[in-house]
Image 1 (tube, one colour):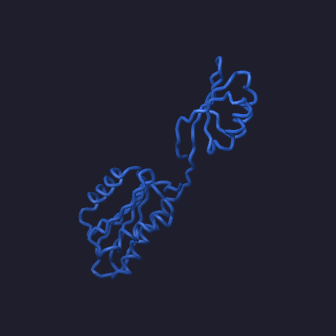
Image 2: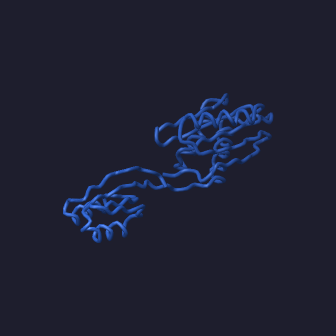
Image 3: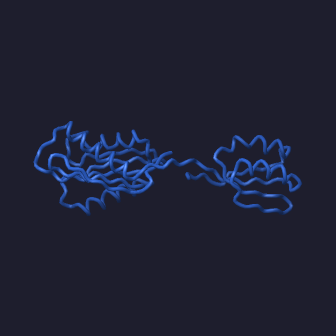
Length: 198
């Protein structure tokens, strides 16, 4: 999964019109809407506040032309986000009209460029799905289990009592699950605790 590395803002001038491109991280539709609302308050005299956002968890994609001709602003912005394969991101382009009409092609080009440059300024970071597990097994099998986990996982903590318990993070449990079950003769109890993107 790709996300922007940080929030960013850029500005371009097209035939006298000023386009301010902004991108920000967001994880919910409420966050995206609040960000758009905040930008409108920062630029109350702008002619348009066009927007697009993509959310990973809820699988939502939305765009808004905010008064520009249909599909000349929001949709091209959304297509840039899709093309860059970024998610959990909201993009806003603020336009101050400069007196010269740009036409459909000119508008699409300007909004596309504003979002593309904002993403370039923000940078893109690749996130991997990392899962946290605990494994409980007889203490007598500690060396063989430790060996498998140390080679493939990041150990968070250990608890040694009558049963040994190790908490660890791993990207792909399938790669070691069979080895852990085989090496403990099926006596290991593996519990999924959480899934995060890192």
